Amino acid sequence: MNNQKLQRILVLASGGGGTYKFLHKAIRLLGLPYTIVAAVCDRECGAAEYARKEDIPLHLFPDWRSQEADIISTLRQIAPDIILSTVHRILTPNVLSATPATYVNIHFSLLPSFAGLIGMDRIFALARQQNVRVIGATAHYITEELDGGPIIAQGALCVDWTDDIATIKNALFRVSCLTILNALLTACPPDNPPMRYANDGSALYSPHLPIDKQLFTEQFWLNVKNA
Image 1 (tube, rainbow, N blue to C red):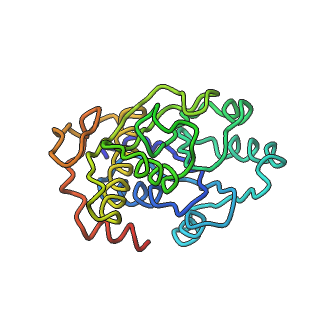
Image 2 (tube, rainbow, N blue to C red; image 1 turned 60 degrees about the vertical axis):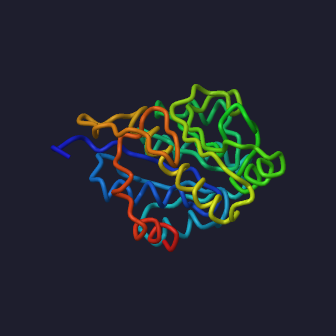
Image 3 (cartoon, one colour; image 1 turned 90 degrees about the vertical axis):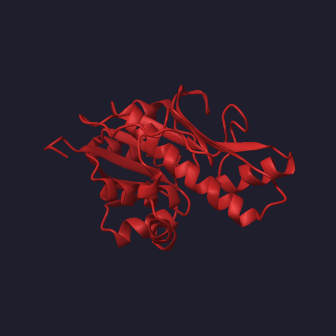
């Protein structure tokens, strides 16, 4: 990392924490100058369990609305450089202005499609019901407009719904993970960013994915799944 300053990431999460686990492991695998310094969750969930397992400081706020002042205080005390959100909550203007951090959200569709909906499973089910032919993920800056912030990166995947649904969902999960990583490297780039690789035939990324996907072996993905 050439003694680069570590950019400090705080994760806001509600669910299983799959993309969060991916990012934590990918940072280690690639030797990127980022570090996850805390997880803030609104419930007991897989993301919270993973934080405990990995000794990442965990902050639980089950009464999210009434505890907003405590959330803001926590964000200010931690003072992260980046706040990555997958939490099933709308971040209020007070939370968004709590720190000068870069706020980034991952949405499990190609925005503006399915804007305002929460959770990969719900969006996936609706995309299947409506026979959407291209699915994907969008990473965008968080603003006061719900799912309306400027887009940082997207990953897209052509689908045939007659294929195995579990296989499609797994492919979408991987596209979403790589889209988050792509957004991180684009919005908050390290001093010496990795070279950019061309898109392959299985998925399309914009900007071009700056990481060789072959580095993420099947064993790596298995480790993320079982984390």
